[in-house]
Structures are given as structure tokens and as C-alpha cells.
Image 1 (cartoon, rainbow, N blue to C red):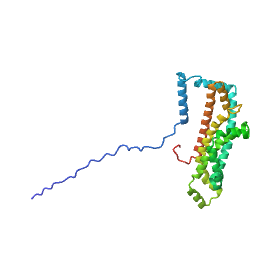
Image 2 (image 1 turned 60 degrees about the vertical axis):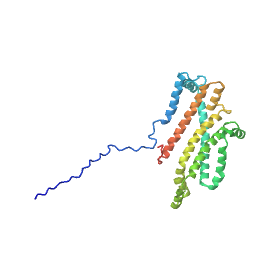
Image 3 (image 1 turned 135 degrees about the horizontal axis):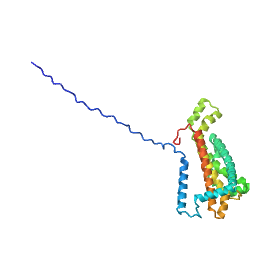
Image 4 (image 1 turned 180 degrees about the horizontal axis):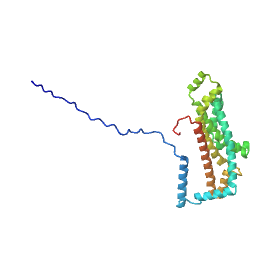
Length: 282
């Protein structure tokens, strides 16, 4: 008797092909920094200005062409007028900025590290901030005269307020756990300031520093039109009396270049000093 055995074969499943390429995760960061990115915007404005002037869309008496402004700037530089005015403006802005920077940092440290200092200083600074700084000009003229002193004093006030506010806010925002850690480690007051306070306050300080640098130029353009005999503001005021819009634009462009260069310098220093931070900007 022969027994027939039927072999059963299990179904063979075809292997699933692995995906050839994984789907890349989308980055939420802004991406790599473009080279000379801060010059792209001003360059675009310059191109639009030149194109509008060449097409006759702008009134030459009101808005001269870029090449007209460039010729005027070259002429003023050659006869020495622009050089003298630039040096005078730099001296005023530099003196006021140095005083305002020192005052803002010292007041912020005293107010941020001491409750008594905060009670004595912070309220007065907040009151000063609420008063328009340029509105103090008549009072400062009565106090200090109409010479250089009141101009430097007004610039110093314009500078110290943003430096104080941002530095004080950074000091107040330091996590209290770092203070407790410093106490547990037995750090001295000086070591506490050097290792915890200063690193914690630097980001806010640099924000205030950038605002202070810009504010010094904004205040200067107004102050140099009050009983001044030199400076970029004086040059622009005289040009207004004679209807020289090209000279006014030269002064505005010089102010803009100074503001952009000084702000970029502060940002470079900030990036180097705060290189330990991982932020969207770096």
C-alpha cells in the first residue's frame, strides 16, 4: 500500500522595498547668513533712486540724482567744508556717547544689584525716559548756555537711557538659581559680578548700546541746528536756507553711513563677545 504525501508550501511574501531616500526634516532656522547682507537693502534703494532719476520720475530740485549728490559731496570734500563738519560732529557725538555710556552702565549696576539703589535710581530714570529729551533743550540752554556743553549733555541723556533700561532689565532677568548656586559655592561679591552678573547682563547691554549709538546720531542732527557754526546739522540747516537739496542729501547720507558703520561695529563686537551663545543670529 502506497501512501501519497502532498507537500504544502507556505506563500512567500515579496520583500518591501526600502525607501531610497529619507524625507529630510525641514529646518526652522533662518538659514546661513548671506555675505554683506546689510548692504543689500541700501544698495537696492540706491538702484531704485538712480532708476527713478534717470527715468525723470523725480523732481531734480526736490530729490537730485545720486550722481548729482556725489558731485556735490566731492566738491564739499575738496574745499574742506565737509571734512571740518564731519570732524566736529564726530567730536560732539563721541563726547556725549562716552558720558552716556558710563552713566548708563554705572546706574544700571547700582540699581540692578541693590534694592536701595533701585529705589533711588530706577524711578528717576523712568521719569526721565517719559520726558521727551529734545524738550529739555530750552532748559539746558538756560542752565549750561548755548555753547557745546548743552549739546553734549543732551546727547549723553539720549544715550544713557536705552543703555540703562536694557542693562537693568537684563540684570533683573538673571535666574535666581544662579545666585543661590553662587552662594553655595561661596563666591565673593567680586567673583559673583564677574562670573554671573556680567555674562547675564551682556546681551541686554549690547541691545542698549546699539540703541544708544543710533540715538547719538539722531540727537546730533537736531542739536547742530541750534546756534552752531559747524557740523553736519549746521551744513544742512544752511543748505535749507538756500534751497540746496543736494547738500541736505549729502548730510543725510553721511549720517546714515555713520549710523550703519557704528551699528555694524557694535554687532561685530557683540558676536565675538557672546560667541558662547547659540542663537538664530549665529
